[in-house]
Image (cartoon, rainbow, N blue to C red):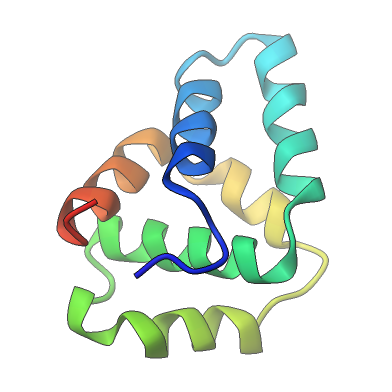
Length: 97
């Protein structure tokens, strides 16, 4: 299901978000900032599925919604989601990844 975003990149986000020291927070910010809009849209969709806001059956629609509503605040939005690592891990699991 992931097209723009790799499983490895999601795992990197999870790892950085789990350890909230200043260096890792900056590294997470940097990683999210350099992601393409499509990668961030998939990451947000994964987060929403893991949080239980969306169903895996609506993956394409959820990614499209994230694309359509993307703006400069995406990085801050993702960074403030707590517990981000759990949401992403659950999202991966729900998608069978």
